[in-house]
Image (tube, rainbow, N blue to C red; front, side, top):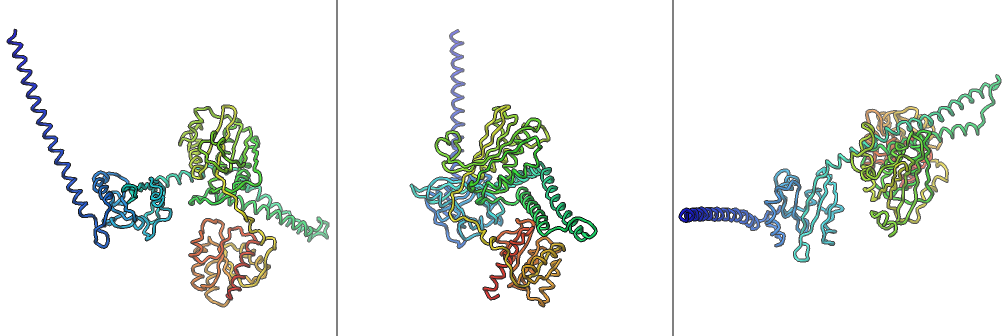
Length: 587
């Protein structure tokens, strides 16, 4: 028994000893391999540090010791990052970049070290406008900013982080993330949402246009009938129409035309797919016009109440996007009303946000706000729905009745305008959406440029070449300008206008041209006219104002742009100012 136990103990000790030997042998081998692998990158990195990439002149870059340590430590790790990462020195010259940075900025494989970042990103010798490196340098904190680079054709979300040597900023780590695809998708989504809203408003737009056409055609028919009747007065027809009655009919036609012009402008603004530009905007007229367009789309059983007081200040906004917010909120309100019966209230007011208001609306900063409110007497929403209404693709509508993106898109628009949206609702109690837009400070001396209009329609002298492919418009404008004292050379095609200029038989003082014409646009005509007569001023007319920016106008020698349909007084003022200026210059 004792012999057997002693033998078992000896066997266990032998097994334990053998296992210990194997364990220590494997551990020693692993440590040796690890030390060998660690030594290889270190030697490679130190060799890189000893011979930094040369700049364009072939001289080695002088690198701050802190930057050198960053360069040595990062390359192997950061080459696997899919987004570009760059180390810049204090002069914004590139010290090092990862593989993604080389693929973005060095398409032909050349070195990017030593080049200023703005040279590679924007092909510019100057620091990019809005570059936040100065802010990062002053505040010594990281900063993130969206930047669009036309040279590369991309939109980046760029993060900037300072590198320190003690308390001194000696460089930056820059990481631009390409968000072009995301922004393009957002743009397409926003446009799709606009078209969805336009489809909702199509019935109301058609209704408005039929009313406008009814006023135009009705007054024209009545006026023509009474004029014919006046010529047949001897046979017992109706009394001769008086001058005041003719004027009344014509003014009614003009009022209808102005309504149509405003309606077309609203549709173009609302459905535009152009880049949105924020500018100082009076929000009150936008709210009124949007509600006027909405009123005709709503069933007669829905009452729309609008309360927009005078004196509401300006906000920094894009008018088309503000109109989109108003229309979608009101459309949602109408859809929430049971049996299409109830009340929608749209109001606008100003408030000053203080500490008390911040307790209720924590996202608001202190200051002045224009507040848009859309309230309805509809079904309302339970708390669980209220918490998710701004989530993308969340909808309470049935399949095929909506994408669920409407309120998510609106939330993005409002956030982009530095605004805040708040919603309160209860089942069977209705819903109230409240939108806060920061109000711009008042500026003195803002009385408009309306004194010119009080002086009436100015007359003048000179020869005008008028070009439009619509013969009725050419005939009408020729008569109009002739009555203002000008000699008019009518042309119904760009080729006819160029023929007049080429012959040189007429001393043309001004060219007025339509933009959209067969075979040649107004801008192309302007270029060819300038080649023939470099001193010839040009006015361009178009039904779509977004075809021309200030830079494009200067590039095509355009002195003035007028949106069609052109008001007679505005046309007269523009012609008078241009020709008067030429006379003062001795042209």
